[in-house]
Length: 245
Image (cartoon, rainbow, N blue to C red; front, side):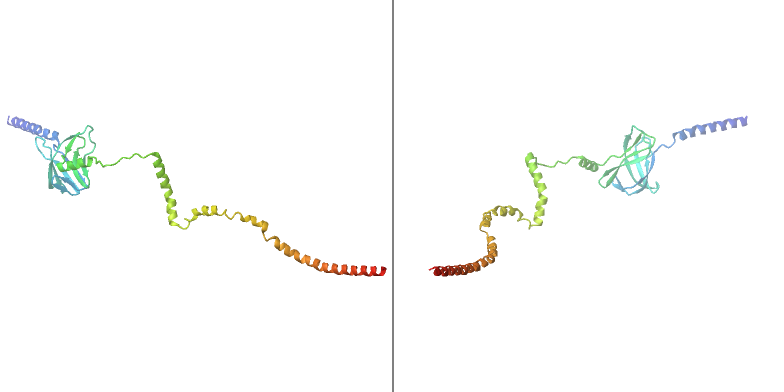
């Protein structure tokens, strides 16, 4: 009887232990833990986390307060904590990731997504950062003046712009500037046009007369010879007449 009683008591104790341990194993990890390497300095609250490895843990609580604590040194050194709000994603994330806000050179925590879960943690932005976000998104209006330009003016402007390079070339070489005055000189040159009449009285034939002068010299001497011959003839005729008388 005693043996049966001990066996029954031992069986009941083992069954109770199994019943107590099974629910705890079925629940698994109750709180989320994320390991991340921050490549930038990230501001959270009044703290700035330097680049490095950090561990983000959900603060254990019965009512899911959604407070996240951040540790450095492999989860051994507490850095800061932050209150988050629920964030939901229609498409379940395939990877665990930490999303950052970027304003200029400053970075802030935005969201933390958990692999295989359609919920995450969102970090509310401080009011000062929200003001900066509104400023960055707000359009800036600059005063301007409208003036209608006729097509002719546009054409003149285009012609002037195209003529500017030759003007610069003219300034670089001022010597060719008198070239435009050449047409005026050419227009005045027709004034001496009557000069071609000079060929009629040109002295060109005078050299020819001078060249013929040597040919007339023998004729001059021939005149003297004819005079002599004529004189001799007359003398002969006179003598012949005297003989007749």
